[in-house]
Image (cartoon, rainbow, N blue to C red; front, side, top):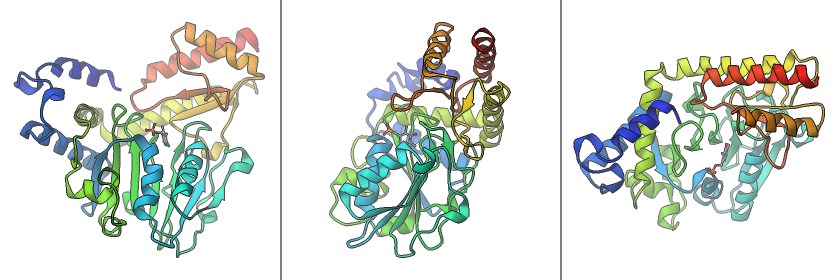
Length: 348
Ligand SMILES: *Cc1c(COP(=O)(O)O)cnc(C)c1O
């Protein structure tokens, strides 16, 4: 979370906009909350340029719930969903969908140990598929698509949890985008769903109320009580992002932040090895290894002692991972790069 947003939340915590009440204490049906919800939606729409014909929904259950909701809502009877698998998240999405209906993997980068993403021309799904699902940034391997995947005639659905709001996105290429808020949009507990109207039209009937995208669209994201506190913070994060220059400015900042670390890796004469293939390098999650796993561990422990926490790679994966989402400051990256150079001098 950006520090100015946390400070503002602290200020407004006990009395929201002079009301004498916390936003958490207000009815989600109150006029004040209706304004907050509308503000969150409008700011998000403005920031990433969401066209008229898409709805923006705020739901719960994390991105993980949508691994199930996508097939529940959108797989037609006898239909099929196609999956591109480039890492742990898209693999999880596929496995969850398999419990619901007929899905297949049309492309997997497993044979490169999830270090690559496919080129645009490599992806082809049958036009008879109900949708094509992919994940635009995989946090564990640290691979990111450098383009918006397009598929003619088939609705493209994207899990953009870990890079939404980090760079421009061409929404028109997608039928639906979903993202757990906790990386770039706000706190955990809300998932943003951007869905095109024609997709809402074809949602399967008879779904349980809180699992039904149409129900959320028809009831302004409030068929039941939403996470009001998190939605308030989403509005505040979006306002902060506009204030620092919007998507254009944050794209440039994210490019600088990630390039500083990648440069430190590439200029280390092999002491640090980047995990992802160059063309697939993520600007949100920079993954690398040291000459052996003992040094990986020592690196993370010593960094932690110097205030650089959270660098240990995912438990299934090892190595080192610097997650540098929108709110992570440039100064923090400078500190990390300096630490990397010092550590190499001491141990290289
Ligand atoms: C973090 C992340 C998730 C998990 O989100 P939850 O909100 O914890 O369910 C899913 N997909 C991607 C791409 C992520 O980065």
